[in-house]
Length: 175
Image (tube, rainbow, N blue to C red):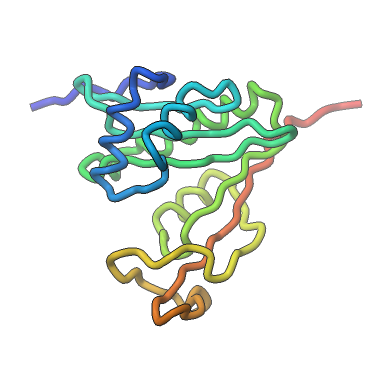
């Protein structure tokens, strides 16, 4: 049984329920309240891009326009759709959006234990700019820790580092 190739499109207020459902299915609190998520979808300084297959949202990314940079705020791919290049496709669209805004760099942060995301970001040319030690609260399931990523314990729970990364977007200029 062949499935439809996911269609890329900009999401808006009409997509609030689909984005909220995708986040809820993965235990993501990133959208905050429904009102905050609705504001994000309606914000001119944001681009929320989605991939839909068979009319169902299977992935999305949110990028914010800053004065000289853009920041990837969120990227999520439905678990059953991972490993199909959807995150790479979304990131290419995010880079295109940031370049269209005239951004000089695309910034992001990622949990230090998210090795697959970090590997993808490196493959796309992102470089590590630094870390915020013990930044994220613990995940419900214990992540795998590497020798240099073990964050401090706080209140008996292990907090996770945030890895700060960026991709330069400036094109070479002669002159």
